[in-house]
Each structure stands twice: as C-alpha cells, then as structure tokens.
Length: 545
Image (cartoon, rainbow, N blue to C red; front, top):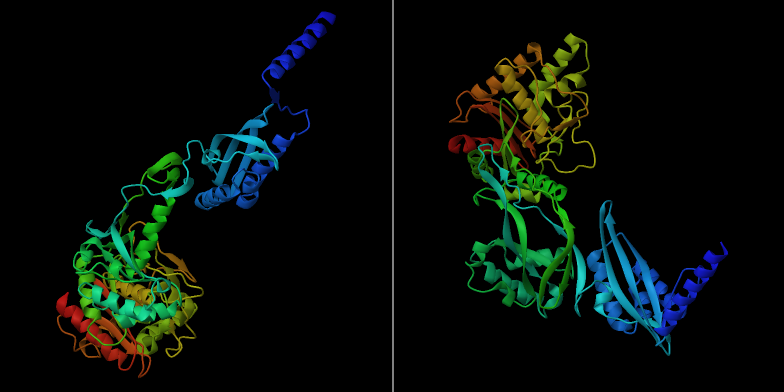
C-alpha cells in the first residue's frame, strides 16, 4: 500500500514538471479561477444571454465583435443559447486557449450545436478574448455570420380543380414597392410609377398608389405584384423610379389568368398550412462573396396536392355574371347533390365591401315560405323551430376549410322566425338550396358545403340531419311557383328552375337561391333595388353558363 502511494506522488510530480517545462498551466476544476478563465466564462455567459455588447466588451475588438454577434443573434433568432467553455489552457507567455461549445435552441427537438476554438491575451486592461469571426463558428469569414432559415419541401403542392387540372400554383412574382422615405418627391414618384405600370396594370393609377400610401403614412407599400411575364410588357424598369424597388417573391396564383375568386384567399391559407407543416430548417454560414453553406438542418417530404371541388368553367361563368351590375354582387355555385362548392365570384364593389361567405346578412322576405314551413313542421312534430332550422342548415354556423374567413362571433342569427330579424350567411343559404335539391330526388337530408375534397366542414350551433317530406315539399312548391309565375319567372335559359327571391326592403340586401341543372346558385347583392340586381346577375349566369 505504501509503495502505491509513493508511485502516485511521483507520477504527479512528473506531470507538474512536464507542464512547467512547456510553460503551460492547465486550468482544473479544483483550482480557483485565474484571470483568463474569468474572462472566458464572462464572455460565454454574456453570449448565452445574447447580450452582444457585453460579450464584445470582453474581446480585443469590441466594435467588430458587437457587430458580428448582433448580426448573428438576429439571424439565428434562437429561443435559447447555451455556451460552455471547454479545455481552457493558460500559457506562461500571457496567452490562453479554449473551446466554446454553443448550442442554439429554436424549439423542441430543433437545435444546432457547434464547437469553435478561441484564444485570449492578457493585456494592460486585463484578459481579453482574441476576437476573430471564427470564434462564432469555425471557418466564418470576416463580415460573415451564421443564420437559421426556413426551408420548404419541393416540389410545392398545387391546388387542383375537380377535374384534376391545376387551379393554383406557386410562381415567382415581383412585388413593386414604393418607399416614401426613399424619394424626395412622393407624388412625383407615384405618378411616374403609375405611368410605368400602365401597359400591364392600368388600374393602378397614381390615385390608387397615393391612397395606399395614405393608409400607412411613412411606410413602404406594395403598389402591385406582377408575374415575370408581366415585367416584360413594361417599357421602363419600375426600379428606375425614385423610391421604388422590385422584390422577388413566391406566390400562389391562378393558373388561368382569367379566373378571380374570393376562394383564392381561403385556399391559399389552407395551402400555406400544408407548407408550414412540411417546412424544414437549415443553419447556414454566409459571408461576402460566398454562397450560403449548409451547416445543419432537416427537411421532410413535400405535402400532398390540394384537391378541390372547384369547376374552372363554372368559375369563369360566375365571374362574368358578377360584373353584370354596378353594385355589390357575389355569386356562388354548388353541386346540388354533394354540396361541393363549384365556384365563387364577386365584383369589385362587393370586394370593397369585404363581403364574405361567412358573414350573416338580413334575409328579409327571401325565406318567408321557408319560415312558414318550419313553423308548421315544428308544431306538428312537437319540436322547436330552431331544431328544424338547424337541420335545413339555416340555424348553424359553417367553417369551410379553404373558403371560410376567421370570425370573432357567431355568423348566424335567427330570431323567432321573424323575417325582418333573420340573418343568414351565403353558406347557410347554400346549404338550404342543396337540401332542397337533394329532397327533390328523394334524398331527404342536409349536408354541409365544402370545397376541399376529404376535408369536412365544421358545423357548430346545431346539427344537420334528416328532413321530412312535410317540411321540404311546401318549400319546394314555393320555389317552383316563384320560378314559374313569381319574381323569377322572367329568367330565361334556365329550364326546370326552382328559386327563392327576396329583399330586405328598398335598400336591400337582395337574395337569389336557385336550383337548376344539377347546381345550386346563391346570389347576394346590396344597394337600391338589390332584388332586381340579384335577378340580373342570375339571368347573366344562365345565359352564359
């Protein structure tokens, strides 16, 4: 035992002697911190707090270090940073070396770890970390940084029509941006930009540009977004206008440029959710004159294409019909059997009014025959009128993935079966039309409107369900009478039409709910004589469909 102790002591003396011979002082945990390790630990602690200024103050070049660290912290945008000092060694010549193990945490199971080598010097002001960009990451050049970026799986999903043809697809676009802070004469720049855009976007006038600027004072606005092919039509580069820049981006756009639909926003949101769910990440090293270099990352497979019920031919006809009148008009078509939305269109007046499929609007006299039938059916079956309305799709609220917009409150209001107080959304009226169409073929049950195949519509506030003949037959008869001898009897090119037409007084709104040719057509208009406007839109649709 004594011999073992003696040899252990001798070995320790040999180690100390060797270290002394080379002028190296290994910093071990049972020794108190020296000046070098104190600086190393303070530098690492400030880095862990993402405090660039404090971390930089422990370096030999505070200005350069602060700039590089600030740029890196912003580019990495990590939720947490953990920096550990490893293998600190202090030399007798007043220098030291160590390693930094840095772990960047972005979210759960999403981290990046790197190990960089660094040095320190004992200056007149104390120990300082010898600054060089490689302290941040091995091989980082002067003026460079590391960054965390989102990556999207390729190819990007497409949004397809009911026939399988591409309806919407990701395409490179050019955002034409005017920054009022980058031009001495904003009005002149607006005029010049409008002239430049006139060959391809004549509606983007100087007044339109100035209105956008007025809505966000002092901030840059996107005057218009153009496809690459559009850029070639212009005779002048927009970026030659003072204050104007052209920013490249990717956007989901209609494959057929003739099509325009309020559905585009909802379908884009659904598509974007798929992109977000399949997105990956990458940490890159970037610097002057070098291509981004991948340091780490993950990327899964792309998401599936979005298959919809939209019929491109129907959508085109709806768009032509919506512009028939000079007041707000929105028209919607559905498959009369399934409730699949075939298309939605609205004119610029309706778009300016922000009319949506989900908002509840007064129905006035439109549903008088329906409310009468509901009242009678509820009494005969000894149930509440609300339950009957729910089964027809009138007393519930629909959230249609790919079509609905977020709402802060209920989208449906029905009060005591009073026509003057009843409000319905276009999707409510659509569900009623589909329920009536199905009942006429012997399928006495209601279904929810939908636009994305395989993705169900959320129904709250009540339940859809079976519909008795005692309820549906009177409504169907009223729709038949309206089309044959009533307000819709003047409509042509619509054989077999059944319809409900009505207004909420002289100022509207006006409604049309029709069943014809295997389709349900719902039209909503606003303004004076809105009932007549709804019929005009319907007439245009039936003539061109």
